[in-house]
Length: 443
Image 1 (cartoon, one colour):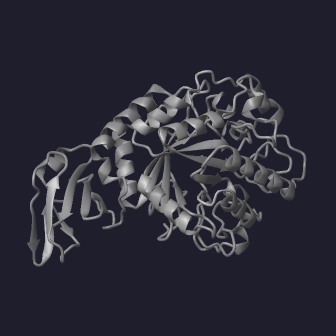
Image 2 (spheres, one colour):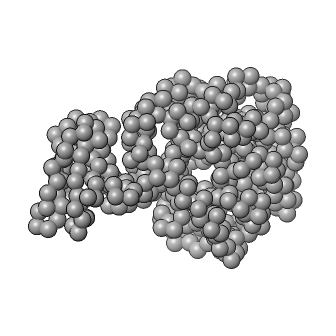
Image 3 (cartoon, rainbow, N blue to C red):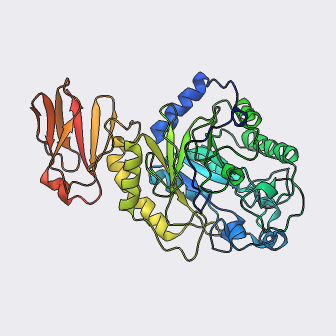
């Protein structure tokens, strides 16, 4: 996951060479997209040898560590407290419907027993295939498993690192050979999509490593990643596996969902989300529980349950999922701060999750007071900020409506004014610190 800002302008044109040409989504992938939209809430897990120094997942690049120095981490990586049964149970209790696990980050370390590299989890003192154990547990507990996969690699000589924007201090001397590197990636993806059961999504990251410098107007890549080959392979191996790419651009052909990093669709507070939200594809916003993605000893900027819930609600109101990240500790345990927050979120979801799951957003554009979700004949007004508003106009003039508060069950004043529905915000809404929800029903 990137920790620096990439300023990307919208005026560039994506070359078709980057995409899966002539891609027509099948009926099954369209159904997978619909199910993905219904799930709304997932757990992102950044974990690997980068967790050991306790300085985030970019530690190799940020500390300018050379490969022969960084590779020592493999010799004492032994996550004895790793308990995927507890991980999955924690995610389910929080109301999450899927897990996106980092199979390989930018340092190239593989969290499974790959046959394509010795730089992997089964060559550590732990020896076990952590992905296999997690995949089995996800299947047992009925939660969808998705996989993050980095397109870039700070350790391989055949990655075109000389044209890359990161990993320039790793001590590599080769010129790079993308044909060789592409063969390697395709072989690894084949393993992941063959040996670990049903995979919900492949979540690509790292495209931006080969883009033009910050502020440049051209969005095109300096490297032809040959996504046509990569995406076609994925859809061939698992026709229902969705593809997403964290390139911060308009989705390429062959991609099945669009992600936003540390921003809700339509916002760009992080400087990473200049792209316009797709009207055709499912959306997902990813955010982390603190400031770091991987385990960081010095990061104490923990998000409260209130913040997480309101972010989840804001995503749903914009028709997006929330993929919420944790960075487990090197031993495989999860910080108590994260556990406590997820438990509190789960308590809220057990009561109000029906206003999130299976809904669609953008029924009304996001307002200062909050957002709206809806499904079937129910609309849910999520009041997040009522300081400067006392009434809300509803765009359902031709419908007969009624409204109640889901927080206390009271009837909410809703009447026609000049042939338009007008809802009066209850006084109790101004005292609610998380989310005051009004259910509007079509009678």
